[in-house]
Length: 289
Ligand code: MF3
Ligand code: CO
Image (cartoon, rainbow, N blue to C red; front, side):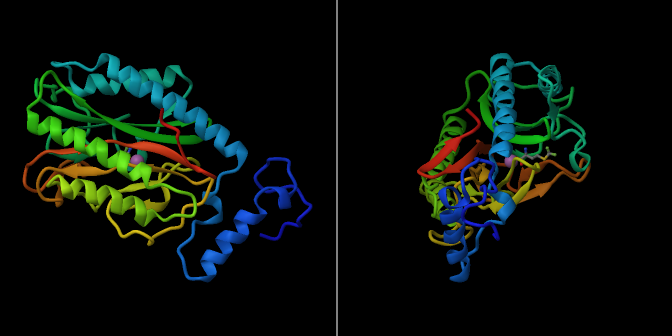
C-alpha cells in the first residue's frame, strides 16, 4: 500500500491513513513475509462496500424469515422458489442463484440425502419427516449476500433432528473460532471436531467462501482443517461459514441429469446451516441475522 501516512485511508473512513488502516496493513504484510497465507487486498471491505453488503444481507435474512413463515408439509419446492423469487424482486433485489453458471432457479432446496444445490421443482413435495435446507443468496445494488437454514417438516425422526441440531452446532463452533489475526484453519478444525465427535462426517468438496462484491470470492472456507493454518483472518473480511454435515460418509456424487445437485454417496442424510459474517477488530459480526 503506497499511501502516505497523512493521506486519507483507502477504506473511505475519512481518517488519515496513519489513524486508520496503516497498522493493520503493516500487520498483514508482516504475516505475509513470514510465509502465511493472507487475504488479497480486495478481500478487506471499504466502508461503502460494507454498507452495500449489509443492505443486501438484511434483504437476504428477510427472505429466509419469509420462507420460515410459509414453509409447510405438502408444499412443492417450486412454491418455495416462487416465494423467494417474488419476495426478492418486491424488495428491489435479484436472486443470485438464478442463471448463475446456468443454475435454473432462484434458490437451492436440498432435501434429506441431498447435500446442496437441490433444484426446486413442482414434482418435489415436502413430506412429513423431511429435513430441507433452503439456501438463499441475494444481489442488491450490486452487492451479494448468502445464508441458509434447515427446516424440519412436521415431526421428524430423532435421528434426523439430531443431525440438524449437530449441523447447527458445527456452524456455531466454526463461528466461535473466528478471531481477527487467527486463521481459517481454526474454523475448519472447530467444525470438524464437533462433527466427528458426534459420529458424523464433513463434506470437503464444497465450502464457504468470500462473498459481498461477487457471489463466490476468495478465500475458500474449508470446514475441516488444522488450527494455525490457512488464510489469515483480517478485520473487514466478509465470508460464509456453511458446513455440510453427513450422517454417513462424506463422499458425494452430482446428479447427472441436472449437473448440480449433490447427493450423499451412501444415501444417508445431510444437513447444512450457513451464516454470512464480517471479521471485526474484536471478533466477528453475523451479517445474516
Ligand atoms: N448458495 C450457495 C452457496 O452457499 C451457492 C449456490 S450456487 C447456485 O454458496 F447456483 F446453485 F445457486
Ligand atoms: Co455460500
